[in-house]
Image (tube, rainbow, N blue to C red; front, side, top):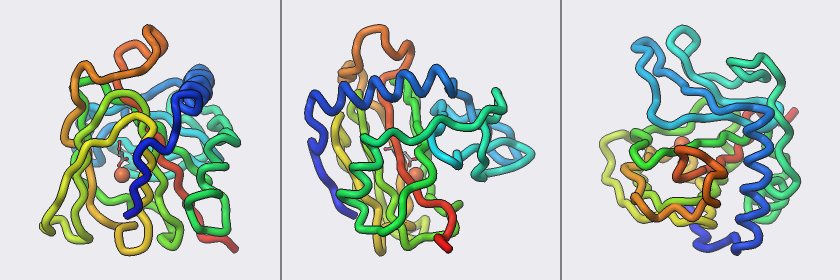
Length: 202
Ligand code: SIN
Ligand code: FE2
């Protein structure tokens, strides 16, 4: 794992939030549901890129080219994010998916692995914006020991190499720590963007 605290400065964060806002107009947040049980996630989501990650009761976890509610193609990944990938990913191909996770102060994300991609040679690059989150990371087995630390607005995290398939999750959001512009993201305290390569390059 590589951790870049404060990788984005205040200007970068504002620019990226602007990109996220316009993306949300084209691809509104949806509430994914768990495979089989249909239980709703507490985190709302949307995607950018040629492929987006979705989950529902009947189809399970998967990538698809279109938004599950509007049926439209996902908006493109902004150059601003692609540039961060080029700088940090140490991987010769571009990401295909940018999952946008939208957390209210009460939302959390259970321990999971990002394992729905074909190519684990590419890292997962995650950018945090807004409220602080208690992020937990363990090993490749669910029962492995875990450690946790606070992710802050502007932090970038790279799950690469041995940690590419590590279990991770978000235990809690710290209320009152959100720096998102007033009113810009109603009900949302934290935004997390994860860039991923999905298909193995030919
Ligand atoms: C995720 O694992 O998809 C989200 C991680 C985060 O929100 O920091
Ligand atoms: Fe994840």
